[in-house]
Image (cartoon, rainbow, N blue to C red; front, top):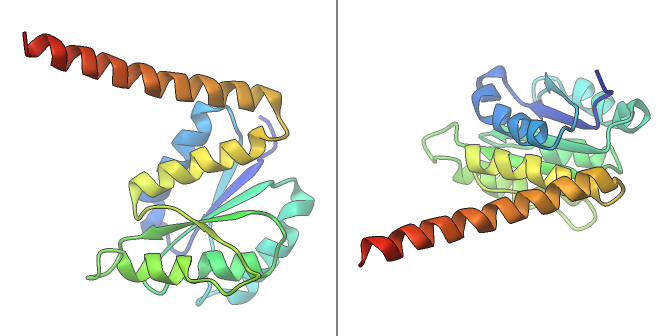
Length: 167
């Protein structure tokens, strides 16, 4: 198996159902990844150590999902120069709005690319990681072009179906 280029981390294993969507997107592009749990609050030293060592392990992009206070992506971004993509997890009565705001409202100098709340966001995080890797990998870039063409064909097919229904 190839060495992972993307690391998918989450604050709790209860986030796995959502974060698997990032892995599925990476699978579509043939990008190897790893999945782990680390918490900004319950294991801050582990989270910092993970972030500091990710690049030397060959990781190119980190996808971090967390709910509630959702500080995981920011803590990781503070300890690495790798791009970090935050996925807000809808884990509280606020339906992920707290997670979204905690992830997206980073101070200047510590960027976290933040995607939508929940499964759509996790899917987009995987695609965004593939786009980042595709900047330096022609094979991934070609797969990204094919992905965009497939999306466009899907719209054309749906449009054609609707036009035919109106006849």
